[in-house]
Length: 183
Length: 220
Image (cartoon, rainbow over all chains, first blue to last red; front, top):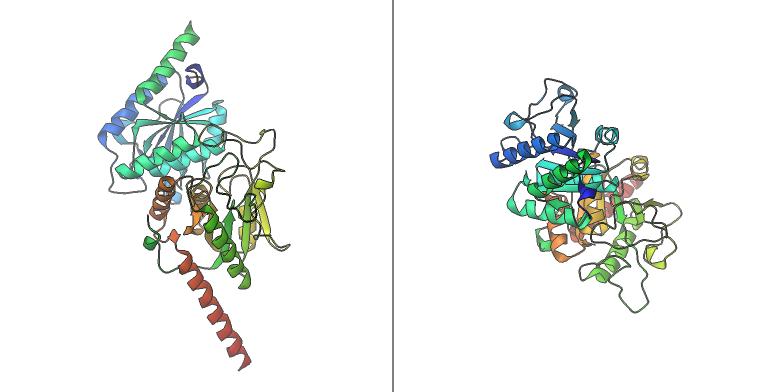
């Protein structure tokens, strides 16, 4: 895969599992992962890569409530960034995520957040089955255990061999393609 | 993960349906084919396939519904999606004898065969419609591959509020490690998400006792 293929155009960053009322109450996403997601979001915005925020909602009161769950670390949508509410494991299941991605003319989904072996794995599988290229930023995701994290990344590599990226690689590709577009 | 860690009892809720996932391949008589074109499997596939055929017959004998899933792709691969971007080569090509369900499964006229072009048997298929028709609540999953089509079918069942029960000793992974890891992830979704074939057979035999008892009670 060439760097241009994985660049900013056609990519969308999808942030998972940082809603403060997540599916595993009492289990906190590690601060270094929240910080890594924050860095990734800043790089995405600078490269004009759209950011989509996925919230876990539970019960009717959560649905579409603008004052619903907040995001960890002071993160969250700005401007016209979409927030997608999900009730299940995959961010594609019974949500408007596919509509949002099509609105952005996306063919490539970059995933970050929590949890690697649940939300990230099952969202990656649905992205894959929906014919999107998929990437997981390995230092911006957290698993429910070290082994579950490793197993999930291996399962995602089975789907797409180039799926797992470091943050530096992901942001480098975005920056390079943005510079190319400006030139 | 040894099969002994599987749930020893199988206590399904509501209507049970056996979902047979992608047990496909051309078996040459007297020779056990372990692989299919484009796909590699962990060792032991042939034995698990034979015992899966036996389990299908046990379900049929008790009139518990069986649904067959068959992955298919066009020879041009126009419908292959992103399935060549990872570990797999072209596979499940329509018209290839290896794409047929293995001999012995032989779906009956009253049984559904659901064709699919992606990994999850729910993705772009009629499976949910078929399962609702049976009023299914609990799905018993067997077949291949543990870490791909079975796992993603299980999670889609889970998200659709079906209870899934993968038979740990009747599924086959792309490797032993991937198989073990996928069973762990399915157990994480449901405490009884992985069961043994012995437990399922025990439940089936208990159905005999129940229906015999009902018949006797009716006769009295």
